[in-house]
Length: 179
Image 1 (tube, rainbow, N blue to C red):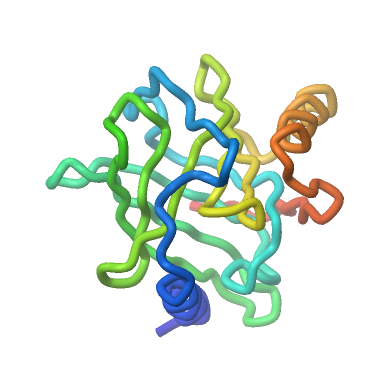
Image 2 (cartoon, one colour; image 1 turned 30 degrees about the horizontal axis):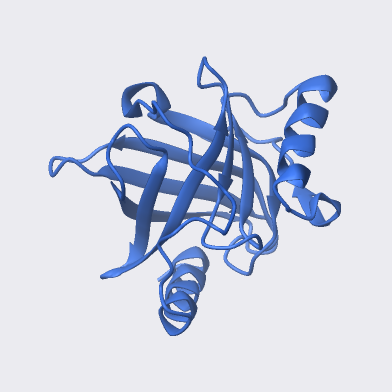
């Protein structure tokens, strides 16, 4: 089992012990009129609140595709400079409220799920703000490894308005080809 998988296993157990919250953080509303098809494909992690399962990883991407059972396959990938190798974890996600609401439950370890809440998404599905079960989980995703500073400030302002501590964000370096 690689480092990423071990850490995700630990995270999953921690989530289990904290009641496996599938709901969005209080006051966060998932996007409505969501469509899964344009969300599929590769997203670059531009910024995140750091957690042990991603600690030290650069060039982080999340790739989404449909599963045969109607769920969404999730492949998270990042480069560990310390280990000089790519770490990858595969999970599965399912809609919580219906496929037109950006609220999914995601699992990387057995039957244990955590919240994946898309609370901001531009009309062209090029940038997204995602929360986990509470405000200590936050990701700014983009279809490109970098976004312009004006757009970044706008997205960070949205995150701050929702109660995320953007002063603690990790800005992800993307210097390697990921595929």
